[in-house]
Structures are given as C-alpha cells and as structure tokens.
Length: 115
Length: 115
Image (cartoon, rainbow over all chains, first blue to last red; front, top):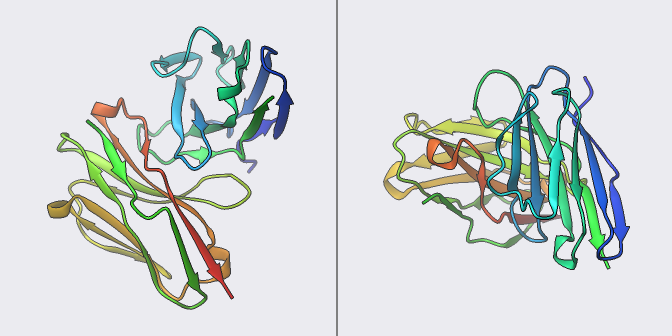
C-alpha cells in the first residue's frame, strides 16, 4: 500500500513569491493534516480536514496561507506571498476513519527555503 | 494547558548501549493519549506507540520499552542494546480533547548511535 505522498520534496523561492505543496493521503483515510516543522522543533498543526471539511484551522495564518481538499482526497497548501520566516518543512499526514486515535501516517515532507 | 517537554535535546551512545529518552507532559484532562514517533533522516515520522491515560502498564516491543507513570506525568522510552539504525529524532506527543484532538508534540530528542 502506498504511503502519504507529498510534492515537491524541496522548494527554493525568493520572498514574496507564491508556493504550493501537494499531498496525496493513504487511500481510504478521510482525515488529512498539514503540519509545520521548524528546524529543531516538533511538528505543529496548521489545519485538519475531515473529508473535504476543514474542522480545525485555528493555527493557519490565514492572511497568507490557504489550503483546500476539494474532493476529500488530495490536498494543496498554498503560501502567498512567502516570507523568510516560512522556511520550514511542511508535513502532510493522514489517518483512518477509526476516530481520533492519534496514529498518523506522515509523508516525507516538503522542505521550503525562502531567500 | 497542554505541554510536552523533552529535556534531552541530543543524546549520543555507542552501539549496544541502553538509552532512555525522557518525556514529561502537562494536561488538565483526565482522558488523554501519549505517543512516541520516530523521525529518521528521510523526514517521515513513524508511529511507535500509543498509550491511554487509564493504562499505566509498561509495554515492551522487542528492544523498545515504555514506562508510563501518571504520578510523575512521565512517559519515558528505553531502547535496549541500541543499534546504528536507531539514530533518529524521537518525538513524544500528547492528544486530548483540550487540544482539539490534535497531536501536541515535544521538541524532540536527537539520538545518535555510533558503531
């Protein structure tokens, strides 16, 4: 079974440019998460989807960040415009429909460098 | 408030040594879950274990063991006879209703096992 797939793995952009990250969760997983991981820190939740509904986006900086999961499968996280402080790893994770068990399956992440 | 503290930033051991990774948590919830995740250099976090707050039994899985003590709010992780492949960053995490059922990660402990 394929795991969580993210792309791109690496992205280097100049500040003020837009950037988008894509995530394909494990088949059948209706819950999808985007996490932000700064260097030397643990992941922090940005947004959580149940199917196509964003059920927790309280930590998403909505002035420049947006996310969508239109058909309840793939998801895209966008930053526009990017700032220097956005340099980090953006992790996508998914979990099965068995409830809030905390057993998440993570992708390898998208590492963003903003110059 | 929800908080997970991993006081050890980096640990270095020689292969075959035993090593214990500490985790202390704070929560006002009576029902909560504790986790350990492993993040190898590839970047993908891997689920290791989940314990609920009502089950203080210690658990052993191969060379891995976990000691959960509610009296000290600790959930420590021991690797016996460490191997080079155990080198990774290990995260302790907490999940509860007060966190909106989002995983609250510690800052992680980087473990280096040398031959």
